Length: 250
Image (cartoon, rainbow, N blue to C red; front, top):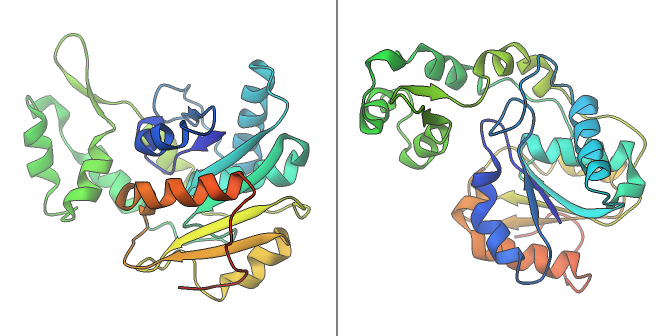
């Protein structure tokens, strides 16, 4: 199974999920371009990132895999399934629809870029500096996972924030392609507005065999808020033994 993180995330954000799923599957969590330990590059369209994932699979001689992605990573997983259906044995998407979105995270990228890292000597300083702009502590901690310390003690952003900012129109764009006929599962947070009931028609048009599950009292970071439940759902689904009902449900 391949796990794909979301915007400003990394494979580390999928760590708890990976540990739970590894009881049943061989799990590989990847860093997308401009994120984590992966390479930096100016282009971030979904066809290009899907090609990155397909190339990764070729490099490790993996013919096909179950693929699960969150948010932007969910769109990458969708695009991979449509462009390379033979490589995707099953698709799971966490709190993301295939449609276009407003670039609402642009402001967060700019907040990170505006932080004067030359004045930061302790991580706690960065957290305090971001508290007003990012009041949610969980989300602030999520963003600050991008902050790393070099061997000389100075802090730096490991993700290529400027490339991500420039690519925001592509990141916000919809995914397009031929429908993926394989099994699919879309999981949304009941407290998130990223996947609405209206999105179900578009999801079914591109992923006709998909099911939709709603996790009550969960937000956009559904896999971080409820890792055990998401692990259980994915284990059941990719084991082809789930009893998920079709269509939106609570």
